[in-house]
Length: 375
Image (tube, rainbow, N blue to C red; front, side):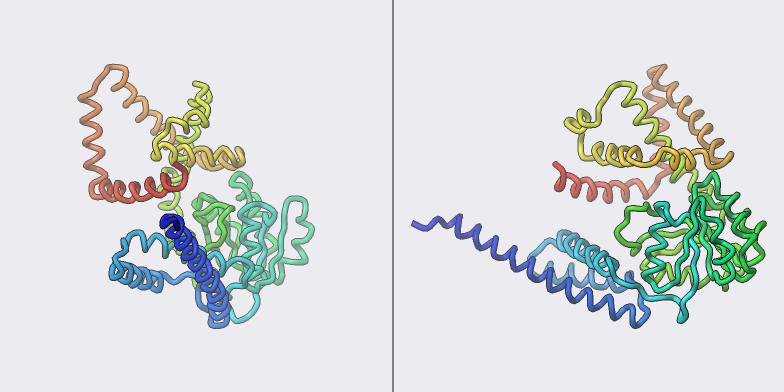
């Protein structure tokens, strides 16, 4: 007698195969879309188009009795893969009708090599200078339209001064350092032409630049460097313009303090001999996510993170203020002051306001996805 369960499973397998066939067909169309975008000078990522498509997809799913939230997750994964496929090995639309010459100082480093590849695939003539190769600069400099400094924070001002001496006055001088006040000031002091501070808010391991954020600080002759920001948008990036000082004030918390908290967490685990593998065996999805975010830092270069944490006097001063706050709260523990803890907790909750329930909703989504994948 035929087993109905086996027949049902075989039908599910056949449907899954059909889904894969449709996804492969969709991928072929994506490649054609990518080529058309290059020909028409359109960006890889268009937020309005994806928002409209997502809303229509949710409505279509609901009409079929499917969970619209699940359908949106499915579509967003497909669209993310589509953007990555458009970016992988393909060329990008160029912001300028003519080829321009771009120099990356630090082209063998992580972020430098990433942007060297992307500029090259966009149709620019890309030149690279790294430590020990400065003898190339006199031959390269006269033709440069853009020079990007992508070196460690601690040597950025020195490199800017050395580079600027050779640049024509109409060359756009830019940097991609994670601090902006000091590099922008150094560029303004050393170069008489257009100056553009940039901070790409992503790592070196991204598969494509679409939907990535870059903070821009146009500091002199913004019109002359506008093509660089147009190019970022054509790559699908989100561009947020900011004042260098305001950028750094926020980054003290977003980067330096966050990295130091991870450093403290890892140091305490090591001191207590709490191996990550043992912690994972008893961790909730929330703690697993936190441990993963902390652990990924220690898979990277220690000098890089030292540069970020100790980037400026202001950054170090804020860390010291953080330690003072830490000591204040530690006193609640020493004195078993639960009432003081509750009072402080409620004051923080008031400060967070509407963001707290928003954070709860969004984090529940992330936790659910994490549990699905790794539980």
